Amino acid sequence: MSESITIRFADTGDIPVLVRLLTELITLESDFKENPERMAQGFQLLLSDPNTRRVFVARTKGKVVGMCTGQLFPSSVEGGLVLLIEDFIVHESMRSRGVGKRLIQAVEHWGREKGAKRFQLFADRDKARAHQFYKQQGWSESSLTYLFKRPE
Image 1 (cartoon, rainbow, N blue to C red):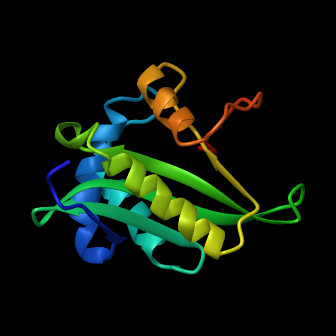
Image 2 (image 1 turned 180 degrees about the vertical axis):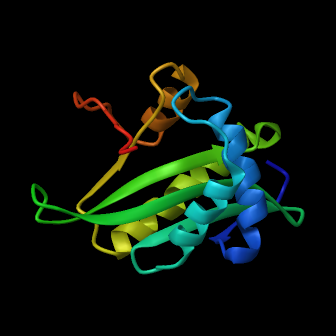
């Protein structure tokens, strides 16, 4: 990879590009619909507590080209914190260049520093390439199934 990639914590000034990246991610998934206003509110919330939530961005040539969010929550089973990795995407033009690997490593490093006892993420069942990437990074599949329900 010839480009210089930097990974940093996002700030509120990044919200417009984070919304664009999340929109790109949502087009790859069937469970969610694009709503830029709600997405911006979600990023504002994620950025409001850096002790338990972080948004990481990958930059090259002055542009954000990827993001990944990490959220810590308590687990009774683990007897400590668990890191949930969510909203992980690298812009299509930058895939297979090590950007995703650097992002996931940065989030995992942060989780370790915060004392997380387990890392977990959700991946679309139909995305074989994503599953292959996660396996290459040392992740394994769980027998658990992700379910959700909207309260409205």
